[in-house]
Image 1 (cartoon, rainbow, N blue to C red):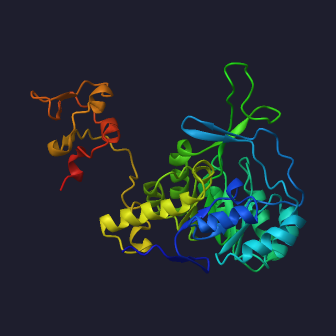
Image 2: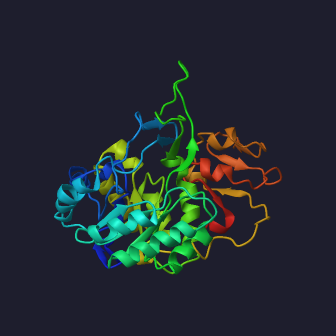
Length: 366
């Protein structure tokens, strides 16, 4: 059986799955449900020196993703210090306390959460091109507390620049990414925005942002020597596995447990364990970073037509429908597809459309 336990930043975890700071860990009761649902550690919803005044409505499920106009915790810090943190600290899981946002605010909070947390995660929010606020926030936290400091980065920044700046400022780890935006959607019947922010804008999370998050994690891992937590769009065990394969030490999830409930954490762990067992990976260390040396460093220009594993093909014709080059058709008896190598442009779309492992690049076939 695969062993999914790990130690990161001094925290011993039974598995690498934890909630990301947000509604699934909005208070101690929510954190308890996450723990019972199978999380390996807890990241608490970000607090600041004042309670947030959050617009309503502030969450909406949309096709392919999830919109939010969420802010930090609607509860003030004293509620957290007097009630939520003590209960969360008693749940027998490592705790990462989310705090934000400016260096001044972080300086006031970091030392106080140290009593209840094993690490702090700094939400630096949505920044421009200047990493100075990240640097100042990391330094403020390091001066105020003696537990590891994790800096969370947004997707819109220059990830290598900001990641290196955070590391040089003393950050012990990184988490990325936040949600993507701003975005907009509305009710077509009356034009009312789905979210109640002043502009109607929100931020996108969920499945749609996974490739953005994966790219950002890859960039961060490639530029720093500190642990990186992969966050953004993880819906399945294979998504978490991919995060580990590009070098993430652990993963955080938010949208999926909102939509599927706290049992999602345990389900994700089971899916990861099943993948590892089927592929002969014994520990997370066997997975971590496996894809790094396979990611190309230059454009690949060679056209490689896919080969067909006939026994796997169900003749569903998805690949035929989506081949804009008319390079795929059924064989004479309609049992499986064949590829016209002269017409094939090597675009690769059919490989990702096939649900039955019937199409492969030649170099991937044993």
